[in-house]
Image 1 (cartoon, rainbow, N blue to C red):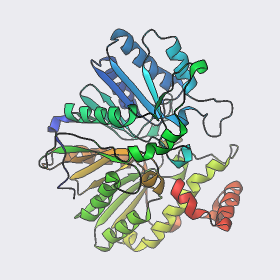
Image 2: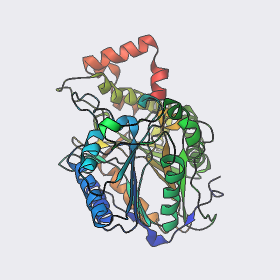
Image 3: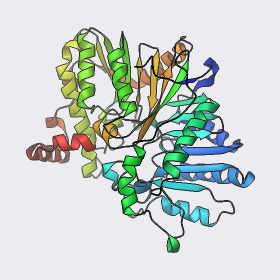
Image 4: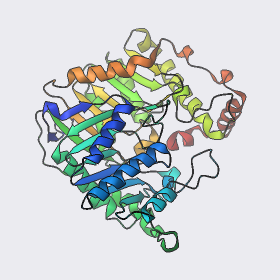
Length: 437
């Protein structure tokens, strides 16, 4: 499947690795400031904090300096209209958008995309910063922690691809399947005149989105990049590509995921890969590096149980595959760096094909959210050294797991966590939670 997958031809010098959130932020600001024709940004959210306001201000300045500049910002509709989880009194990022645009001489378009009628049923998890003829691709959203505005950061992957055809293809998909849809609405409307999309359009939006695809002038040979979309279980090219990467791997896999909760079909493919004597390196965040981790000394809320649920999923997998850990086929690397968090996604196979994506390897991403990714085909080995350097950088703050017993058990968890997890087990809610978390 992978060798037959068409892509956009690119030259070796077209790819750049940024590696750190500071370099990512600097590159993003520079590209926005120097944009000539268009800026299309897709992210889960653009936060009302220092970094988010800085990005928005740079966008506004670029528009003021060049009113013809086509600027579109896409964020999840539901996420933009609520406060942060566990934070009271925050009424949503859209209030900032509305205030800034009301005062602007040259406003920009910030669109809310309601992938589903409720946030827990699915969100806009589309990624990519398409600026003129370049694509900055990262799983990061736009706020203080992703952009390392202060001392704390959320580690992600950051790549720049110089390709006019890739940029055109990603813009065209957004224009045709998202912006033009009646379910998508402006988040900058005046409060007194706000018109929300009809519920019937929102409920049927998923069906229309499931038909979306990237269209481009393709080649099936040489170094190329393939943009991929995924929504729902059926006809999901992104999910199929991940499975194909595992099944078609001849030697080894390098996998990054913030937490370990893979769909059953992927677990089976990984287990089969190991039984054939091949190698897997998995870099997963320690529970303390999870977005939702709450230190024991802080007030606990229910959402803080998530990192522990994911950790038990990892322990279960490691226990079943302990034989592969023992013989060196399976190497599980736990990432932890101070108070920082881990958000990397992606998979590489045999050092030849590399998927960069914002999609998590979990049932929710594979069935509910709108996801995308870019498959990089390195047929000539032009980027082998750069990907190996990136992997070494990723592994810098990791500790290898040598036995499943190194992973904490329920008995060692804080009392509030034990209470919640025992309740989940008693209600037999594990299966449902795995599908929506």
